[in-house]
Length: 525
Image (cartoon, rainbow, N blue to C red; front, side):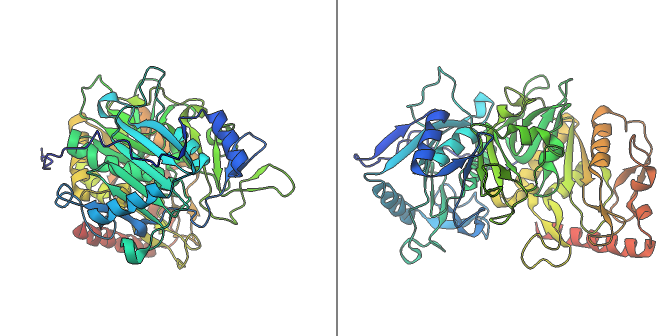
């Protein structure tokens, strides 16, 4: 088994409390009801008829990856995978920016919250979140793990996150690209977020920090995936980029949800918890949300939940989920216990099955394929899906999209370090990995049709229950993938994608182009 070679790293744990100005009006660890009162009194949001808060993030309705930096210092210089994703930032410039941010809090109302990330105590990270907006504090309450009554909240922490949308950087002075910024000082354990009101920056900055510390400090594999567990204790993981069905497919009413987005995989014994949620809540996209399609998420949006950048039905306080006039990236934050079948504590044994989800807009990938460990490594490194026309400015035809490890934007270390850990884990625990195409059949986008959700659910259910264990498999000519020849609840003609195309030669040519694109991309990683 290939070893993961990384240098030993020591992490700060006593830096925790930034020196706030003495005249700050400090509100610490307010209860949700008190925060809601603050939000309404401050004019930061409105109540929907479900009791959920509706807040606006301002100019930025999503993350701005090109404005994210990591401090380059003696600890990080040889460990970080520097480049367009992980842009270096000067340590002295960080200290000066931090000092100015703290000074700008003078005389202001400031909210702080103690929280944790990581549901397994051995790998839990202590957090202190300092925000200038009450709704950002409630977001942090929702998204991170909340301490129990006996847990001290005034001691040192591992990471302090300071968030102030009103504070802007001066690119000429600070060395940032724009006035908004997210900067991680991994050695110091401080994260600065300024000039943006998008709350997702808080969540993803902590995820990025964990993607650095957990592999180096504990040998834990951090993963951008959803996880659920069946009644027999069988854990399943769902990897997938936006639009592939990760949240929808993991929110299965017949299984318990461990988490919808961020997890760790520890090298624990077969009867011990190995999969653990980093978070205490969910951050679901809600554009065009309906109870019929996603009842678990729809019913979770009640008191304490926060809806971002959504609009009301005119003249009412009823949410119009179909309204994407502000952004298509409308989201909702809520504690995970708003999901009726949430797993508590949010842990599970090593997974028996992993599903890589790809919305293949070229219509050439099989709807379900069984992967070998080497194929699992390759597809993990590819992190493939496809954008379709109209989903992003400038996209007029299906476009292959690759995000190594299904989370390239959050990976401080080289992608192959995470992939090596995954390969070790699946070989050690005998985990079966599947590739699922939730995209198109019978042709690419504009010609073929989207896979029926009912068929995708049936294939995943068959894999989870062992219904495919004794089924014969064939091999795909272009991709070398193993395809089941039959599957309960799925028409046989759907299982091999070439059978759904009218013109077989056109299918072969399209499949060959995508296979070549895969090969070329793997050479780059």
